[in-house]
Image 1 (cartoon, one colour):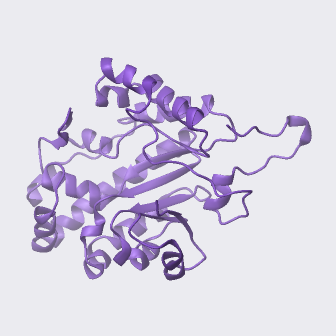
Image 2: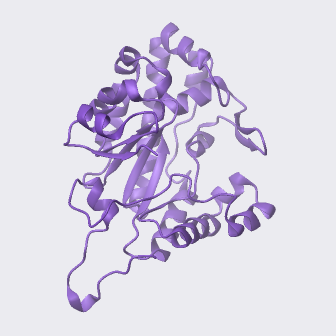
Length: 294
C-alpha cells in the first residue's frame, strides 16, 4: 500500500522512510525501491512502448512522468525513480546517441582521440529540459510521502560509452585511452563532470528529493587506477550537488573499490549482490548509509 501522509491538522510531518535512511536517521522500517521499476512486466508500459520508441518516451514529459508514477503506485515502493536513461546527457554533447531494439545503446560519434574530446559540445542550459519537466510532473502527481529520485550516469561510465561506442565486456579501448593520454582523459572527465553536475542540479530544481549517480562500469578498474583517474572527478561532482539533497553513489562489481567510492563521496553507497552487506558497511564506516545487496 502507498503510505498516507499525516493530516494537515496534525502538524506532524513524518520524514519518509527512504529519506530518513539516506540521512542515517531512524526509520519505521527498511525502505524498498527498485532501480528499474518501470519495465515490460507492466501492461501500461508495454502499451506505451508498442507505440513509442525508447528515446521518444524519455523525451516526452507526460509519458515519462506517467510511467514513473504508475509504477511506484502499483508496486507500493518507498521511492519513485524518474523514467530516463543515464546516456541522455550525451545527446546534446553531439555523441550521436541512438537506441535500437534488441541491440541497446550505440554512439555514432565515438571518442578515440583528444581532438574528439575537443569536439564534444558543452551542454547548454535547457538542453535536457524535457527530463526536468518529467521530474516536475512526476513530483506533482506522486503522494507527498513518496520521494522522487533523479539520477545521472557517472563520468567514468559515460566516458566508457563514448569511447567504446556502446556496451563492452572488457573496456579495452577505455583503459587504453585513459592510460595513453591522461591529459585528454582528464579533459573528457572534466567536461562530463560539468554536464552531469548541471543535469542533476536541474532535476533537483524540478523537485527531485534525492539523486543517484550510476557508475555502472567502474568495477572494471583496479583501486589504484580509480584513485588516479576517477576519484578526483567524482569527488568534485558530488561536492557540487546542492547541500541537503541526499546523493546515492552506486556501482556494480565494486567490492574492491568500496573505500575509494567512500572517499569520492555520497551520503549512501549502493552495493550490488557480490558483496556482503555487513562486511561492506564495516569497511565503509557507519557514517555513510548503504543500499542494495540484492
